[in-house]
Image 1 (cartoon, rainbow, N blue to C red):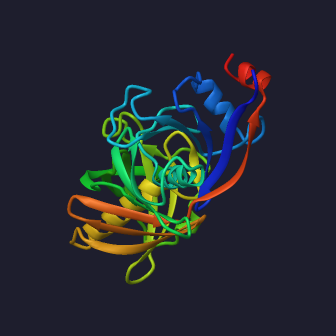
Image 2 (cartoon, one colour; image 1 turned 90 degrees about the horizontal axis):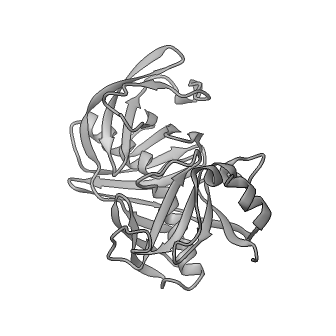
Length: 275
């Protein structure tokens, strides 16, 4: 058997390994995902995007293609906003979808996307729903936050002091009764009218340079705290910046998507990674 095709891409430096697998034949185990994402023994990534035809894994979608997304630790995740952008660009670049608007299936539901001529991508992210409040603890310091559901769980904490001073190397604590399946933790500063700065510790990954659903959650939480549920904001993350709009029952995320490299995984490495 020949090698296994892969591509490497990123959206605002939130990076992914893409595995084209139209019929869902790859045995994509937790161990293999973790090995692929390891930055010493694998390719290195924040997650894996498997490209499969809708229905091949039993997941319903009105679109032709489904994004099977896995976190860096191998766990299955519902949705990834930066990942969808990279996924959509791959489909267009490879001739599997036409430039413009089409639908990508995810475990959080179908996501309409628009791939623009410059290959930036706008994703219709669905509703960003405020679900309550909770607390996270970073290096012994508690931060109150707004819980937001963007198809996956988030807790957004608005800080007066600079988020750059936070130590996010270790997993912050959170209320496991409120978030039994884990949570993405966003820490934000207001930068004036229509702009936020954000850092994020992602469930199953650690601190990342960007989180697409996290930027949507951050904007929704910031507007909620300001007494509204509608608006547009630029979000500055470590990997760049994105544009987010939120309104009652809907949100969009717009930003770049880059394909960096492609190649083949060694068959012997793949077999050993799954053992």
